[in-house]
Image 1 (spheres, rainbow, N blue to C red):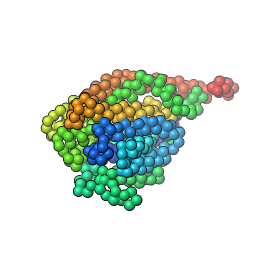
Image 2: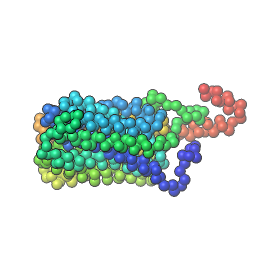
Image 3: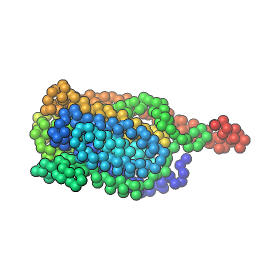
Image 4: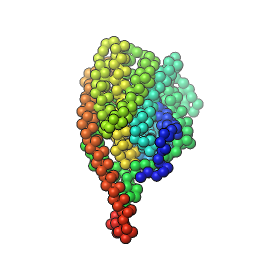
Length: 474
């Protein structure tokens, strides 16, 4: 039973709750600006740091995802036990400083370490945010709330391309700059300072204005008391629903592989295949992401809520496999056409459907997991998703380009291969996962009813019997 303070009156306007969603979205915007701006500056960074496509892919994908994944679980464990806004604000400050540090890089190793630090900071954001949203909103509003938060990823990605393109255009006649204390830096290095340091202001506002919501849906023990959960309990919960989480984690990870393939290598594809400049590419892709991807996130969250209202308990999984199935043809076709306009039209469709999993993957986890485990289960998903989707996916494109086709101009063919395999696997796993997810929800509901019945029987029992039962519980 919820305490009176956690129950919203009917018709209540969730004004403050939506404010929290918006400021979390703003933080997500900055996180994606910081991680995505690297993709637009591929050519000057490769030239100045003497990198191959494979080395650049390690910076863009593996370096970030490695520590994002490794640090996700311990940070999420803290988020499940302590004040989530404080943890998130600290993460925002850390990744902002780390992004600026990328601008000091003079070698592959320096840039690799800085990108790892960006991953550590960003590991604090999404698990804690998903957990707070699940406490702020009822289930029927959660898809939209997570969808709005998820808009930040593509608003940030779009702004990264637009700002990157603008800065490159602004500084195209200046090869180097001299800053106090730091000394001489190149134009691409200055870009990291411009996009990274403003995040410190977001961290400050977040710390001052966001309060931790009361936790709802807490797991109870046999006596009706709130159960203290250790990190191993989250792993055991995942193991008890292993078929569901296998389909969810791996299915959405392959979906993410296609998305990160598009976001990471599309700039290089258009510059190499159609001869566009970095400025033209930045403006063009920035507009595409701001329109197609943000619309896709909203529609993915809306479809999830629409299916829920019609009694589809597996709505998050169902909405995701529908999006993945619709993405397959556009994600391949945009790399194979010889006309720029046709390629862009296919890209818009691919980006739209590529955005469906952001709200649906999170909604599925928050609806199934007990409160004390939500951030940890989200972090485990982000660990798998980033290692497979971002770390492996972007690197496979580079390896196929370098080792199989042997030419940077063939990057479009490499993208088509990875997208085809990843999307087909995502569709199959998410489709199978619908039935497994329904089964897990039913089992959790039955166990919750049994726990409530035991607690109610104990509370209604005579004092002497209640004492005996309490002793047995220990």
